[in-house]
Image (tube, rainbow, N blue to C red; front, side, top):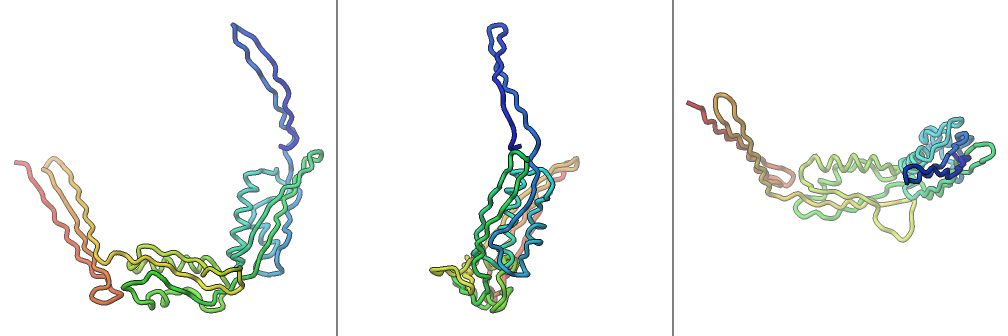
Amino acid sequence: YFSATVTGPEENREDGEITLTWKVDEGPPAILKAVGFIGLPDDPVITRRRLVRISKLDVGEPYSSVTYAEAKKRVAAALVESGYAHATLRGDVEVDRIKAQAKVLFYIEPGPAVRLVGMKVVGLVNTPTSAIENRKTWKRGDRYDPDLLEKMRASLYKTGLFGGTRMQFVETSTPSAEEKVLVDVVEAERNELQVGVGGGRDNQGFNVHSRFIYSRRSFPFRLATTRFELQPQFVVVGA
């Protein structure tokens, strides 16, 4: 509501108290007249039509600052997901208060469309590099897609060999159209003991159950994990 007006205050005195009242006239809601993208690269992967759809900004509907903020986040994410990992985005809203209309403009500095050309692995101690390389979800020259990295991260986590994984581009002085991925891992503890204890009581007695799991990673082979599990249970039956 860009045409809202406020009048007042009106003063009301009663029983030694003073009440001040302001009246707000919201006026007509501003209608979204247009959505524009300035600086959009000439690329069939990321077209204006696609960004309009992703933004979920509906021309002809009332303008909302909340909807605009959410749309900006979606547009920025779409640029990155389309391979423009170094893209920057700035938004602006032009308002015609007389006509109660709003126009949203997104100013894009896309940078280069990034291709993945290699990988650097750090943090390994007991695990061979092949455990990382064999789970790489892209090949040299593939267009950058954050979903590829996320799938690789999930694959590494499922091995049980790593307690943490961080992925980013290898730092360079300037953004490049060809980037190497830095895979920084933290190996899980080679020895791990998990203990769980519970209990319950019913009309027949009382029971205590427990669970012990011992895991030995990189045993008997470097990529193997051996687990031993014990589940003792004690039951006390009432007389």
